[in-house]
Image 1 (spheres, rainbow, N blue to C red):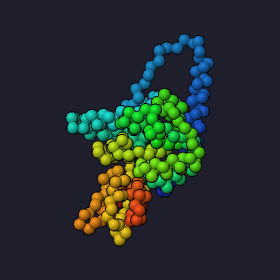
Image 2 (image 1 turned 30 degrees about the horizontal axis):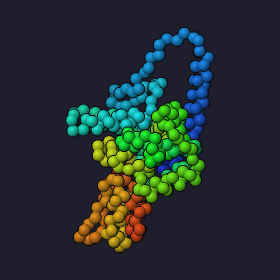
Image 3 (image 1 turned 90 degrees about the vertical axis):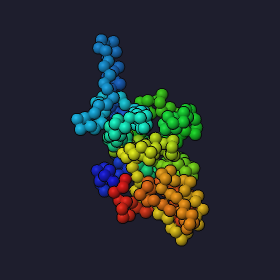
Length: 308
């Protein structure tokens, strides 16, 4: 199990346990916001000094990333801005790049990291959280310029994730609330298209959304695969393993792998899976017509239990 399972899941899948108190946090934060708004109304007409906006974040003495107390921060936007710094520094400023990667890793781990989940796990998550909404994918907007586009409506916002929509409606506009049944139907639709399901925290360990995206559009997948920012996206609980006697070497499953973990051995006419590269999204298994791929638990597979 990953360290989040130990710290936040009591030894089980942490992303199923975290949801149990995410809704409580959401209600508490909403009440706090309402109280602050009520206090602000009472001050109408009073003479107030100029507003001093605090910096969004600072670096601690040990180099860790920390948000400033009271700072109004949109985690999605900050994430994309930090990743843009890494992308711009790559190949240009090799001395600056390790510092930037450490900053992004620290931010992601403490506030807004992702983890790959299977369709079945994503369906379990929507069963135990409330409310559920679907909104535009920020990666599609940042990477593809897809604004006000129905094809960009691929992100499920869960529980505390709805809070960002309330706070920044101009950024996260166009949300549609879904029932559990409707959310599952959307997840299955995305799965048939080959999208990878990833959960995302909003102030770890509170889970606020499930992204359904693909490489290279997804900044999370791209940051981990292309730029080695490891804390941006953790591998899932499972790994794909081929069943060779069933494999006919058609190679169709390879087209669904977003992580470069699959190849075709032409001499044997069999698909090979590099399990150390596999993130456990199960897209290959779901799209194999011959059921020649099975998903095995990472924790019980020798050599993989510590590769997250």
